[in-house]
Image (cartoon, rainbow, N blue to C red):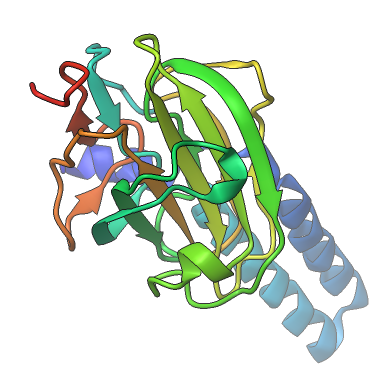
Length: 232
C-alpha cells in the first residue's frame, strides 16, 4: 500500500454511527476549555484524544468491489480466525446442513463498516441477545450477541452474514431490511468497537482464504460461486 493510499485510509470521513461519539468528545473539549485551570485542561485533552480515536475508529473509506457477480466478497476488514464447516444460525431458517463459514475478527484498529458480500435479496434478519466474549474466540459465534442476515442470490442459493458483538462492542448497527436488495461491496452496517463478522457460504462452495489472512471489506474475494455444485 502506498503512502497516499495509507493516508486516504486513515483520514477517511467517519461513518454516521460515529457522530454521537464525536459530538460528545467535542462537548468535552469545549467544556474543558471553558472551565480553565488544571481540571478543565485535563478534560479538554481527554476530549480531544477521544475525538481523534473516534475519527480513526469510525473511518469509512471507499472501496472498489470486483465487477464479477460470481464472487463472494469479504463482509468486513480484519483477520480470518476460523474457516470450518458448521450449520448456519438456526434463527435464519436455512438448511441446517453444515456449510463453510469464514469468521473475520475485527480488532479496534480495523475499519468496522460492514459490506455486502454479494448482490441479492435480504430474506430474513434475526437479532439475538447474548454475551460479550472476546470475538476472536470460536464460541463467540454461538454465545455472543449477534445480528444474522440471510441473502438470496440471483441463482436461488442462500448465504448468511452474521454481525457479532465483541468484548467491548455494545452496539450492532444494520441498515438493511427484509426484502431489500443488496449490492456487492455496498455498506450495510457497522459494529461499534471490537467485533466479528461471519460469512456462511452456499452449500458446496469452498472458501478461497485461510486462517490468518487479512481481509479488506468489499474487495477481498472469499469464494467463487461457480455452478450449483460449487465447481468453478
